[in-house]
Length: 227
Image (cartoon, rainbow, N blue to C red; front, side, top):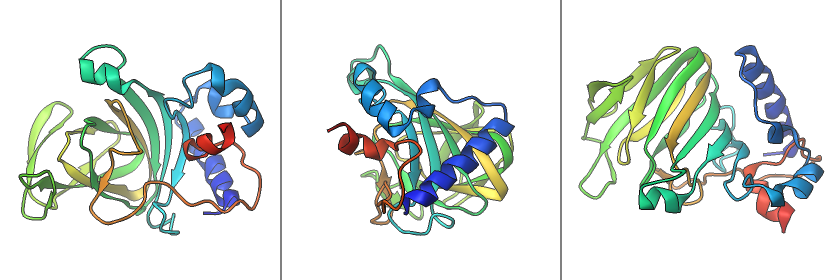
């Protein structure tokens, strides 16, 4: 993706987030230079909090992509010991018919919440005995605390205010149905470097062509900018 396109997506996301009355934390507005100056005294970079725009390395953002902002992220060692900061929260935007491709997680459990906009479509499959994708397996999820059995490939239609709880091994893909959707994600500790298992061999992050300066850094920029 070109950096200019990423900057444009940030602007569009800011406008949609504001329309729903959501306010991002102060570190969201740091310039790249401010981030380099301020981040070493915070957990922002360590926890990979902040802007995240991906086309999964496929170069087709409008068809396959996602906007994310990690608001908070705990510590994996806290999760492993069963106490402390074992949670994470994100804000996402899924555009109309924009696919976030089929994947699951090994560690993370998550609530995916339609915070506003159009319908959020979530396609579900179960796992085989090894946790792999199983096209003939359904499963069971909670939708706002109510148990729901799903058939393999079934698509949940979540209206604003509705949510689904996904556990490790629940394979899922999602997109905006009939328009753009503002999505909340509340989960256990998030590790986007190792805990996203995709059905197809694709990447988690975009490959960036630097055709202009970044408005704000992406989480995938941190290592390079802070080194």
